[in-house]
Length: 376
Ligand SMILES: [Zn+2]
Ligand SMILES: [Zn+2]
Image (tube, rainbow, N blue to C red):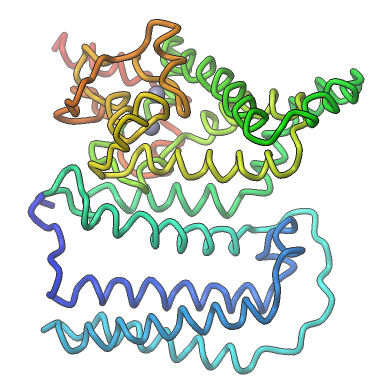
């Protein structure tokens, strides 16, 4: 696929894709309503208000229909509009036949379909307009050759959120549960909101920095982290491309200080929102650079340099919240106002697709493959 396939406004394709996307989201929510025990996240259920959920699904459906209608008018190809109209019809039929709510039985393993749908919807609302109207790489299409792989990573990491959560919390809980942290945690919770939030971001970034650093420097670990660096097309979805092993180890490390410090719940939830948002934004294909704030917080330009395939930027810009951590440890890349020419693993050929990328690091070292090729 060539880079010139970037979608243009007014062709009816964007509205067609948006319409199908929104119709699938509404259908997903109706499936959640049919099987809430299996497809909804336990922690989320408590905050759902049935009326708000119902009206939100209806609003998404109406939007989907408006986009389907615009696509049918604008586009020569009518199939996008037709596909989404069919999905909308199925959703409405299923939605009206929904049985009256019965009690939800707690199951030990649940699938986070609700989390997947909410996050993909919110991320799309925030990041698609940013990438559409303020792109960095003007010619990079949303539908580049790697986007399906990235979407699979996004879907899998969301559906298995509950299992990932259990694994991530395991080391922190088991190592520190019984060492009597109550008075220390009470002191932390007595700190005002803003400085407490700063401490949460700082300590988790220091732990994240350390594990991220080792994933680059230890050859066996790099095999796994190379999956994250294999993308040549950075965008908001590409940040999801992380090997399961890399994902759980780095998250478990970052969770240790959060658990030990026992931050107040308002700080904890704000921290989660910032982490989720900044990690996605850092990969987004956008030139927004936040003025002087780029010296205080990690921006897309900062993290794009971390993904650069230019050897002079290798093993630089590890931080995910605060650039000064890299400055202190001598791993800051002096980027000025420049952006990397390209990203990826340079000459290293990494297999494509979720399944191959999952198995590959266990059995092969991408660097050795490169050395074999150069000896031939
Ligand atoms: Zn890295
Ligand atoms: Zn990254």
